[in-house]
Amino acid sequence: MVVDILQQTVSPDRDYRLNPYTFSVAEENGRLLKNMETGMVISLSDAEWDRIGCLQEESVKGADLLEMGLGDCVKYGFLVEDDTDDYEQYKQLHSLLPFLSREMPGTKTYTILPTTACNARCVYCYEEGMPVQSMSEETADRVVQFIEKTRWQDTVTLLWFGGEPLAGSKIISRICRELEEKNILFRSKIITNATLMSDKLLEEAVSLWHLEYAQVSVDGLRADYEARKQYVDPTAHHYDAMMDAVGRMLEKGIRVTLRCNYDGDNIDGLEAFAQEVRTRFACQDKLLFYPAMLFQAQAKESGIDLHRRIQALKDRLAELNLAGKEKKRSALKNNFCGADSGEKSVVIAPDGQLYHCEHLPGNMAYGSVYDAGPVVCSDPRASLEADPMCRACCFLPVCTPFFKNGCPDFFENCRIFKEIETAEAMRRIRREREDQSDDACPAEETLEPENELC
Image (cartoon, rainbow, N blue to C red; front, side):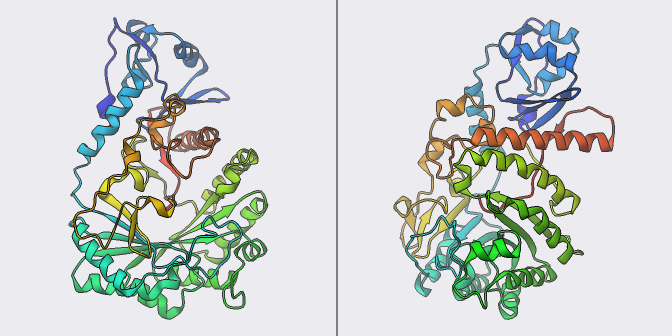
């Protein structure tokens, strides 16, 4: 879609320069370029790059570009007219996309916290110190009424989050049962440690919750897992209980992603853990493995080296068929998180308070399921101008414009992280293209497996 909007032909008498929202990475025999607005990736020889690399600082006539055979660099947005206001064009595209999506009005996704209680005491938990709350039956009934009032007219998604949401399974069942009685179509996803998923509860999750997907939080091999999870009752809740639950969910046809939290203390064992997972669940094609650096590690300089190291593991996961089928999409889109989703998603706390993001503090609620009138669900951060640092960053089109100015997940080394992961993703595209054919046509970006938790 973005490609179609930006696509243009070369005007011989116009001056052109490199689009600042272009990321490039050097290869042995050339350079790969990615347009962060369109998601397009092209490969240039050293000679071709020599011709346009200088356009970061100067411009060239369209006639000269045509003579050099580089007209497609304009067509696919890698080169823009010299007088283009790049940030203004980004804003216009960003504001235009919602009108092109043609989606029905109403909320699509409800992230619901039945409780903030948890049977684990993860040493890195960002919720440590938060008061423990559990949803009452009265609030659960209000949640159902809220969904009935605000949902879009199609199947809605319920994402169960916590704490450990399975510790509030009775509330989950109550909400799902009432939704079924009202003939409201829904599917469920869950973020869980899975150790409370008994056989009986699993049957209920499939038949009543319509559970289709589970993201299971793990920490690597048994020793790392049990040292970091520190369950309240380690005799009942432990590594084997988690792995058994994963196996039973897979057997029921539920898609499972293992979100493996890592830092410098457990990264060395992740490849062995991935191999153990593949061996144990050899015949399962609904299982993915997602390495996720802890927020605390991202904030440290050592996190950069960890991020580089994990790229090799991603290749290994692909070899083990744990990386899943890759998806394709345009780079620029109008919704990256709950804060810029408008009415499309909402987080509901155990007390019925409404939030745009599960990481926001308690004083940033914008409404409640107990409100009698309509709730204004627009997050004011979504209309903020991008910070000057972000405006000059080539990755702005693939980031929230308020990432530096208002996002609780912001960290100073964000650009370096994006450079590392984008370079590796581009190289994977190049390798895949070489395996398929020698055709050098631009390709849309292929993405890593979906991560349900931002």
